[in-house]
Length: 147
Length: 147
Length: 84
Length: 84
Image 1: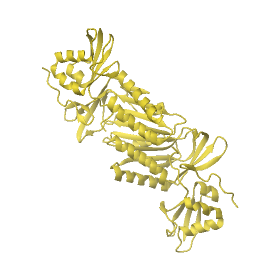
Image 2: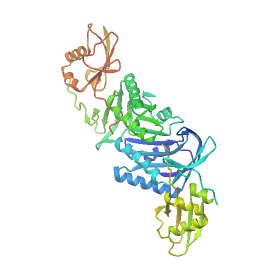
Image 3: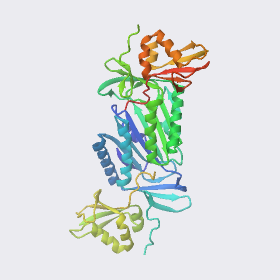
Image 4: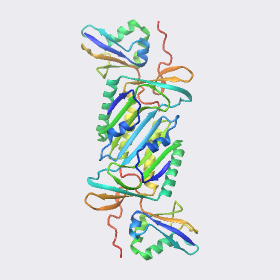
């Protein structure tokens, strides 16, 4: 299951999608909206995605995981739209016979998700500013004025 | 939350126990009863624990995690009694500001849980045999006859 | 030929639209679109360096050749998941 | 002095009981209990090497001294969690 959704994510969707009687270990990652970034209070977040390409790239990450670890049970879901503090933005579940592989694969899925899946985050601060962010740095903090 | 329980584990208990507005990353591990071990079909499992010591040791693992990663939000629950295939035997949740630490800490919690938390597993095979197992090897596969 | 061009996030905001159809001459590449956008709004070019392009849901380069009906997208740096 | 001794898993099964009270002389250690159990069932001694002992919910050695009211446990190798 690889999905972009505007609905609330509980984590149960991805977990149920990977469960299998021969998979003893399920590693689940949930990313939730924090109330601050580097100490600056966050009001809410907005996520935008390119859904068909995002879902295709998620499926490709799962194929990479199958190649690397022989794991076939991977599910990813990412929310779009406005998210309040504490709401889940992303959930990834990996089921595997062995837990070490499951942890590695789930971590890999999150790393790759942030690299190649077309999803963007706009942070709206309590102080009234808002900006599109990219990992590790604010991207286009000030848009040039339209001429 | 550090708990030995005879009730069904859903994972929600540990997840809710660690949620916090400043913790963006939740890593959840669920261990479920597999339908086989090394290809030999499993009928069901039985877990026995030394509950007060097990809960104390779980809390100590959480303290170790606080020392190593500065993470304060760790929850662990382990089930005892008879478990059918697919049922969850153990759930560990770690909430952290950064996902890399969360993955490491959750994996560490599981490793330590298997080392120092007094919980034992008895595997009942479809072929009628049963044995107390230990990690990586069958422990006391044949009990000596009482003399 | 006619292609659909999609803009996301900061590009969407910059160009004030999320999608448009473009009529392009045969033999056009992704670069043809980039040049057209630059004509409309010169400042966009300074962001090309950090942007990626996609054609039909696959990452592409500016030299990727286009065909009638293609879906092209400008992909600013992605932030999928969370910042943790 | 009187202590409670607890047996789990394979020990529970071997000794056919999960718990008992023992009257021990002053100055007894964990080893005093191990010797008593060995007297009852000699084969148990061959498993002492892989077992751990606990006193009052904390791992202990065979030389740990006991006090009245202590709770002692024989801890066979643990398998907490799952075998994966």
